Length: 100
Image 1 (spheres, helix red, strand yellow):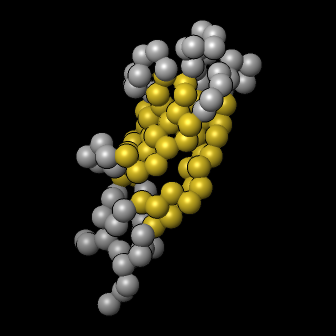
Image 2 (cartoon, helix red, strand yellow):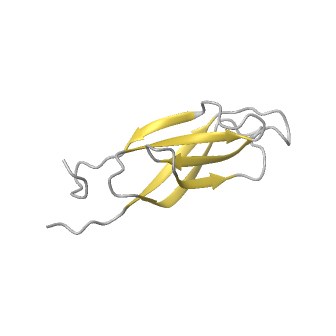
């Protein structure tokens, strides 16, 4: 029997969002599970107008056992979550912590 261990991942996320000044910009991106429950997030305190697209990383993200896909979604301070998202299937082929 294999010991069930949480899986730890690093996410490198690239976003293109021109924004419109100091109020309208992407202020975070989030990783959510299949049910929409928050797993982790990366927050930003300033606009990235001169840096488009921009990439930011988040390490040591613990993905719950049993989770096969996650969604990474960007949040705009003015419009909220507006479709800036990608669904990701996790690379679990060599793992033994998910039922067949």
